[in-house]
Image 1 (cartoon, rainbow, N blue to C red):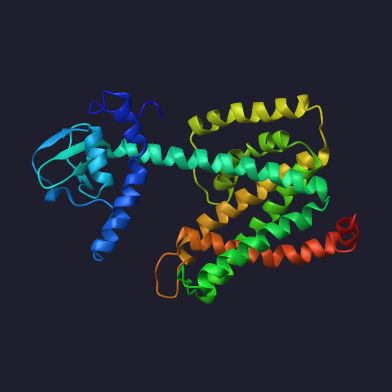
Image 2: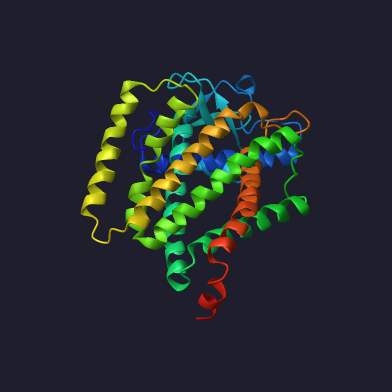
Length: 317
């Protein structure tokens, strides 16, 4: 991420403002949506920009926060896609090249996903230590998630997607593998250490490449295969050196990797059928919500079958 610097930011204060650019784009989009419902993009058209372009200053950021400037895209030499800038009627203060902001945004999402994933695994481990029923704990997670998603749809906070029968049929196997991957990951974490399960699950890209080549018939370059070698070596070394090794932890993490890779491959394979009844593409957030609901429907009977008899006594103790 530190490579993403621009000639227009020569001070540490300017670089700090660069890190806030994605959030500034979202804020600008919200403000524009309130003032002009017809505006469909968070960044205004470059053709509407004034000619004077200056370097970013703290005063420009303050003016933007007050609503006196708007985040727009302007032509620049640093990036073929242009630069993001804070603009008013007189001038534009360049924030950063659009490509830099996009890389920071994606990197931020990856970092947030990793932190939340680790936090979730640690919490799962603490819960399964208190209640040694990993199938039930995993099921409770997706049940709560499905209730949350349906609450958003029922209250109108999020528009409920209208799906065709073909879309539902395409989502059922994807949701089933989602459930298997989720339960297997929880079982693996419960049987061993969180760190060991996370290391083994890091081999997920290996399964994804193998299945993409076998199922989707997509060619995987030699460079990609070579990049997977350190992952395989690291997982093997961690398995050999793990002090609290347990076969259940290893098999659970491997099964989770395989199931989630199959979920992703099936999602890619069914991309054409995943649309609403209106013909619109199914939004990623709605798709994940639907997969959570299907996962809950699959997980509840499975958890009752495996742990249904033991759960009341373990809960009471």
